[in-house]
Length: 511
Image 1 (cartoon, rainbow, N blue to C red):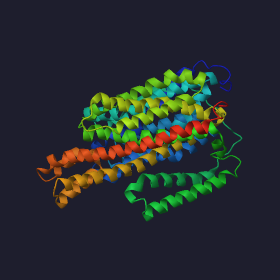
Image 2: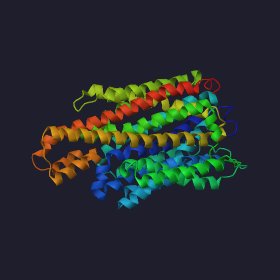
Image 3: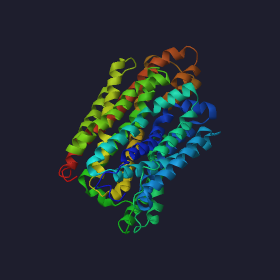
């Protein structure tokens, strides 16, 4: 469909629906494991380290292969990459559901992440390819509302399926969704023209892949290893060296994987700031909020999922409402409003308490969904607008890689802030109450600090009589850490709110 940019394509809306359904499952898998980890740990008898890799393997592969898969899709055809990726993703999902061991489940999560990277980068390029420029904002808004809903509703889906059936169905359910999306999209999605004159920079890939992997692993494991530990320093240094060599290679090859001239565009550069801050808020906020609802407030998983629905609802509703306006007036003003929404959400959540009124909790979480809904589609539109559609997948790959790095950083730094304040608060409260702990009790409390999601069950292992005394102290300590993490998000998003319009000034009009 070479002339899709000049005239509308008759099946473009059906193609959009099919692509959105296919990518929905990838976004669900970002967050679905947040509420099924206890079931996985119980059935597969996993260690805490294995549980972390159940979550991190998927995310790591997304970051590492986002740019690579986008570039391969640009060169060989995005439709091929989309369909191959979704078929393998469905197979990996089924095997994950049937996994007899933690090792098999983790391997499936690695495969899901690689395929998910292909789906996310190629899908947005295909959406741009099927729609004329005047309709792209609305099309991307629909895509982002469907896929964003998948990420926001993931914890609810996981909680409901684990309560009603088993954690395994959180993976099994991907298969019928993929089948439906494939049937809708199959004859409606048209292949992008292969860039036969270009070649894959295999040497660059040889340095980019381990470099990105090392960087993300160092960030994810920093709190566990210690920021000054030899293992962290060695991993981070090796990653930086590999990425520096990659940068030198890309400046010299004819067909680079990443054209660093992208960052010379002021609008794209501003969108990378949005990706860092929004990605950080989604990563840390989506991790902390379910723990607050279940660990501190004691809500059942499905109730916690329902209380997270304001996020999901606004992520779905807001993008289509502003899609046409973004087409007509430009996306930057909506990006700025979204940044303000995130700042206000972090501010509201910094006042959450164990007994906060439900309407106030829903209000604070709703602001999160509002900021997310205002920014995701508009930032994608703004980032891709200055460049030819033939480069869309690489542009999206770079933007989403930065997004995921921002999420990793927020989880690492915000998680460290949480741990420090949580431990300090609990230690001070125990001392003030003159509570003496046995060695076994100290181990239980230490496990609570490292994994607050297990608080309800772990407290039962304390010496009889201590649970009632320590539970209120633990809740207060958790909230001290939670408030610190929210202030971290507030500060980073406030800095982003100032930087984005300053960087984009002068570039927004041309975009």
